[in-house]
Length: 464
Image 1 (tube, helix red, strand yellow):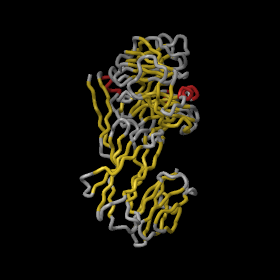
Image 2 (cartoon, rainbow, N blue to C red):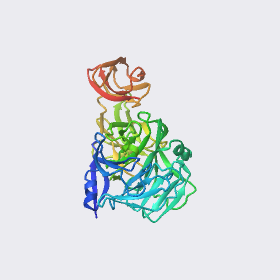
Image 3 (tube, rainbow, N blue to C red):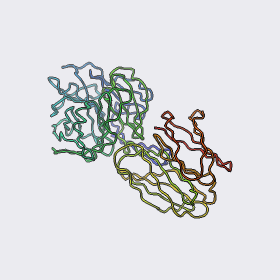
Image 4 (tube, rainbow, N blue to C red):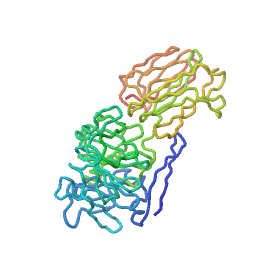
């Protein structure tokens, strides 16, 4: 058996994210040759296919829908075991008689029926831990169960889920009866719940419980009132090595990628209907949906202070350190800013440096998330002697009003769409003022500021 660690450099921060893929047999190696490009889907008649994520086209048939013995019925809960190269899933769901929880070995093309589960209702979710030692599932009644060593015996854990705010998540699981689960490389369980119109994302932090619990607490990352991309339920999820999540939908057979800022990107239509019924992959990323910097600006105010504004797509419990340097090499911490700590979304933060020095002042933001991963923003330099033409804009993104802080003698602001078409134009005076952007369609725009001295600055912002 060989363990392969794959590293990915993030362009914004210049740091590495790492994922773990374990290879053992020739068949396993063939399955997991490129976990960035290929995931696997299970149809409800028990067929397993490879899926090319760039366009959602279906490739190799890993397992046909033909079985000896009982035929497949409402198959679901597909999980991939990275230590032995086998797939684990319910060939026949809990509501079937008999139910059949099985493993499938692609190397020998053999299916083995394993222990009968303790689940009490239909199963739509299931996955194997990164170390390959257990399989966990949540049935549509909100019962969390697992099977130790993947074949010995099942254990009921709990039917009570709460989020970090004390909200009843079991009701969400029951009402949004579709969805899926997946483990990352740190042992955290990621849970997507979905109805045809709404979906949510939660994380059950490691270590996973292995005995009965009165209740478990999950971290809510996407609010359960969030609209599904096209009004169809999300039925399958799978990781890529970079820590993003693929989402497969039923009804319209589409594949999406959930980005770090919790937006979704459409990748394509499945070329085999129903293959998004359930998904899995060979990737167990160590960093999932890492913080994504939306923007960071530093601008000199008319009173000589430096205004810092940054926007991020974040999870809960993030801490930001405002760092300062005169030479760009030796840094000190000016202030510590706590994250909003109330779930996911794009957040705006602000800090004003009261006493910059004459000449160059360098600023950056150091972030530490709840897994103690450290990331840095880009570096901004402000020359205190050059006050004319400096601006900062916030919040970014904004829904209605964009605040503009102008240092110096003011100037003219133009707002253009990404094709260069002029949408708004306004003269502004020194100081802070608001500019309504409610007339703009949602999207990304360019703000161009021309100072009275002829200097030009451009900034992008999002109208949400």
